[in-house]
Amino acid sequence: MQVNIERIQKHIETLSGFTQTPGNGVTRLSYSQEDLQAREYIKQQMKAYGLTVREDGIGNIFGKLEGKIQDAPSVMVGSHFDSVPNGGAYDGAGGVVAGLEVAALFQENKLTPNYPLEIIAMIEEEGSRFRGLMGSSGITGTIEESDFKNIRDVDGLLVTEAMSNAGLDPSLPIHRDSETIKAFLEMHIEQGPILEENDIPIGVVQSIVGLTQLSVTITGRAGHAGTTPMNKRSDALMSATNIMSKLPQLAIDEGDGTVLTVGRLQVSPNAANVIPDTVNFTVDIRSGEEEKVLKVVKNVKEIIRSYDGNGIKTSIEHPLYIKPKALSDDIRSLLSEACNDLNISHYTMNSGAGHDAMVFSDVTDVGLIFVPSENGLSHCPEEFTHADDLARGANVLYETAKKLTEA
Image (tube, rainbow, N blue to C red):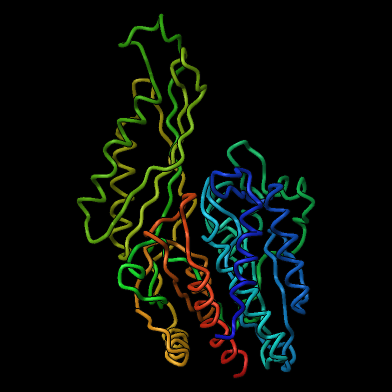
């Protein structure tokens, strides 16, 4: 194994320290102080490995090793470095660290590629502050720059304002011409139990589920909790909870791995003695079949709209929709060959979680590998992947990146 396990472990431990919630998992939201700390560390490592570093107008970080072919498209390797609140140290960060290790190996082995190598660390994949998959969507043009500038967080702060407050430059270009990207490689923790249960160190992903997210607002009328009779109330929270209780069954009825999650919930005025007048919640729907996603979305909207009336108004926004994605057969073959050459057993599988790789698959050839998650846990402080497993994944990416940058 050519990779440096101690170096990988050091990167993981350092990045995990940039958290808003020490002792209770990693909380690193986009453009936060913790983001800036991680950002500076990643840029320092990129420079140490001989890469030319830049950031774009959405805050993604690129470290580039120029190739021999002038103006050739880049082979990109990386993942995201934001987190969910009280998440783990490996989701996203493990893939960024794998990219850094690929760059370190190119430097140590004095490799000058024909095609450029670019290590990338992306923001806001999780959508914990603004919108899921925002970094990769900005690069690929899935989000128009004009739309990007109108995205707000839950406190009403615009992305551009948050970036400026953090000392970043939102006036820089965001969208990247697809002709400048030859391929994108990503390593991610599995976030499930399959690899660990079967004692398989690498999962080579062939497809990623489709996913969509709805933002639902229920508006009623505030009133005094003690003096407003029950039959005179337009209680936004009671309507919202009645709606939410009916939604999981829609996914159950659809079957075939279809899942639905009611996630973020905000109640206003959020006081013990006031009838809530506004509730906002999110609905996340995923399936390997697009028609199932669309059917559940339709049924969700019908249930929500049935509550209009008697002082209750509903509105639905649809900020994110991504079709199920099949990844490149050619890249998958290269990843499998690398596993065989390194004598690492591997397993072809599908992904039930969304990843930046699915966004890049619209514009370039994409390869995605998984490494095991202990007990299948993710998005929690207990999330853990052994350094040996991270190292095996980084080694597979390195061997694959070498081939892709050669021809």
